[in-house]
Image (cartoon, rainbow, N blue to C red; front, side):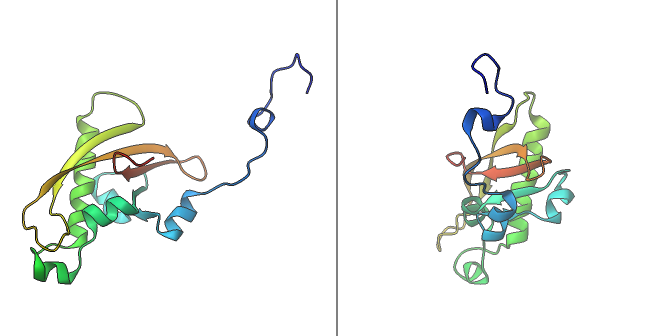
Length: 142
């Protein structure tokens, strides 16, 4: 490339890609958890995944948790996350690719029986093929 010509590609600016970590790999490895068909039932038109941290904090629930705490199930807890995210989207007047929202969930700590408020964020971004996808994360996650 000559000095007086602008770069023609990102490779000209940054060089070749060294490592590419795809959304499919993150789902396969469990870093992301697919919300599955429940997301479309809740009103999403694009695929939705939750980070493992959100899944463990807001969705995961075992039969043994019901014996120690209060009756819940992972499907109902996932539904709560998805419905609150949809409500936040519908109630948002601003554009952009990120949105903060909150919900109440019973912490999975072995003793709690009442819900605490949890803050989450939703990011719309490109999937592996450039298609729109949604990821639900904790506020400190990227």
